[in-house]
Amino acid sequence: MNTVLWILQIVLAAAMLGAGAAKLSQGREKLLDKMSWAESYSDPAFRGIGAVEVLGALGLILPAVTGIAPILVPVAATGLAITMLGAVLTHVRRKEFGQLAPSAVFLVLAVVIAWGRFGPYPL
Image (cartoon, rainbow, N blue to C red; front, side, top):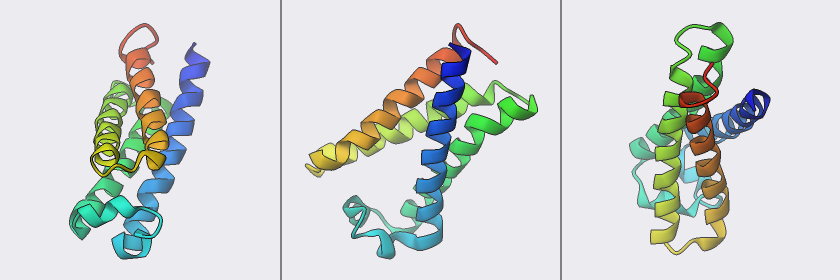
């Protein structure tokens, strides 16, 4: 199970790092055609979401790899779960059901990682 959790951590970290880096580097206006939900948020909030995603991605991997404060891995997973819950709720509120699946999958991944690393499979 530890190997499965590591795979999930890497997959979720890669997805969050990519999404967050895009939000930080390209900005809201350039991504509106791909992320229509972004029109509901200000530029600072959009970049803030990107920063949270990047920091969460780093928190899933770096503490475990370095052995420095590995308790931060499930904390990062919990933070990403909260972020993805917000994404799911935003898509539901905006009736963007076609865009709901990726956020829901990332939410489930984050919850499984948090459960596993806080619970029976700590680092």
